[in-house]
Length: 319
Ligand code: XMP
Image 1 (cartoon, rainbow, N blue to C red):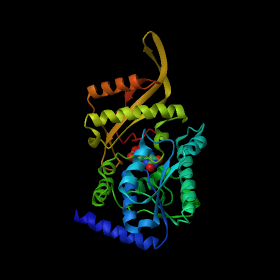
Image 2 (image 1 turned 45 degrees about the horizontal axis):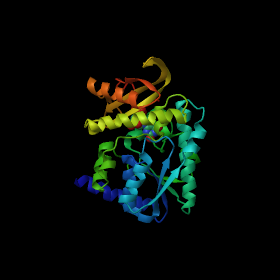
Image 3 (image 1 turned 90 degrees about the horizontal axis):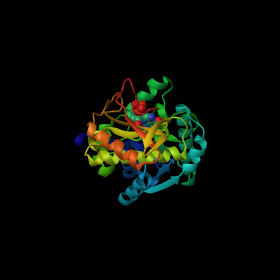
Image 4 (image 1 turned 180 degrees about the vertical axis):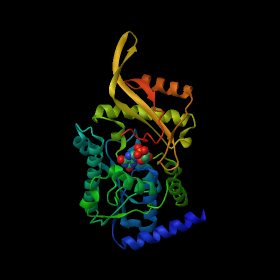
């Protein structure tokens, strides 16, 4: 694609012009956006770049190992794996308000990036995969100043307290263009095709208080759900699919006993940019089989429901 080839060259030149011989930290989540930024910057500035993968303790099953090992295998770049699960989860203890969750998480990300920036000898820049829809949504949600840290969601007065300048080479792109750029950069297909995953991770799929126990139940169920989607060849037909563990318990029966366990909601949508979305019309067979597997294989869930809300009026995430 010649236009993406041209975009890539321009973006590389722009990054070089912006950062000069300065050092750059890049938050790498393994999502397509941050992966594309990482590879683009690596091509642009090589060793001046250090990628930081932050395990928030709210990643999906096996995700941290998968992302870090794939990147290490394919790219000869500086990559730090920060295991910050306890730091995040301790700060989130007892917090159930969605906006407070996001503020705490966003603030902790910044603390970590600043810490890592010092460790590499003073990085002056923070790179991240902000896309055009993030820019638009951040303005319309907050109505506030030009919020530059990724979207309405992660923000919480962060730019003011951050010392680093932002490098955001994808600010003008939509998701499908980011994927095209990723292919242009030779990014591994595993990353190019990946469903979006929000920065706060499983925190916003755990409405109410986040506990390690609830996260563990959610993580197992979510993994089975995604396994079902892959097995049925549906992964690339869906924009995003995930499970949500609800802050409510319902009655069930298991053998002769009554159970009082968690309810899990499944979500899947199609979309082209995340700004509008339709729920995915699974077959009843698929839904039934998936619910049965989750209930049989995950201790702590006795009911599964499917979310049939489109966006608008719903949002993709539940909080
Ligand atoms: P909503 O729920 O607003 O989501 O319809 C639109 C897209 O944004 C993702 N999302 C987030 N991404 N931090 C992020 O980095 C967040 O706090 C956040 N909240 C939602 C969501 O997964 C979907 O792709």
